[in-house]
Length: 252
Image (cartoon, rainbow, N blue to C red; front, side, top):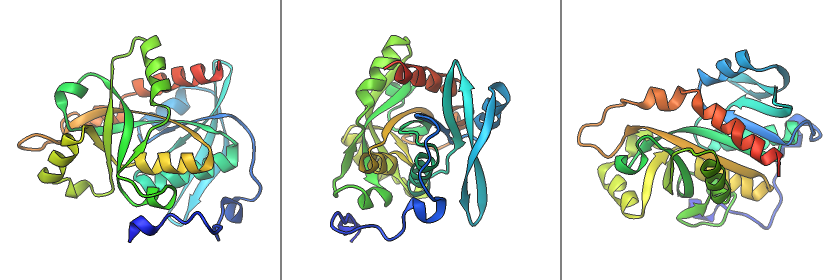
């Protein structure tokens, strides 16, 4: 059973050092985007240099070091899905030394009235994926540890936001009406594909995760359409919010 996958009693056979060598230390903060449009737009706007690569059999992704307002920030295009986005965090941490990750992305709304026109700050994530069960003891939800810190930051910036549970799932095409109703009944306000895995990995490795979302499509509607999803995915405002979060972390 997948709920038996958390092994805290024996060591891992494969480690980042197996592929990447000794751990490096370049910066303290990393920002990740899932957007193929935000990624090049940021690189056009800010001074940067390539400092590493995330390699796999089917692609090579650069990691850049941004220079913004006297801050040095690792920046990369994250893979989608809990397993791959979480592995990206492990490898970027290993290659750059960054131990504070600011990650932003889109989500499907489960409660349009609560999320419309607001950023979503997740407080807990329902673990409907596989990655987290290898990094944390089995449970339905995992707590998002830095939600209060993000709330304080968004409040100081006068940004509209709502806090609440989210649902992390691997299976975009199996978000059924019964499952949507069950998650809503438990207080979930949005559905996404990464957070439970990323948080479990960060907790395990002592990395600080700061995650916020913007809802686009509405999953809980009679006839589904992807309206609003493109803007939620690719609007550049989320990156500038991430920079403000980075500034707050730098000033701690």
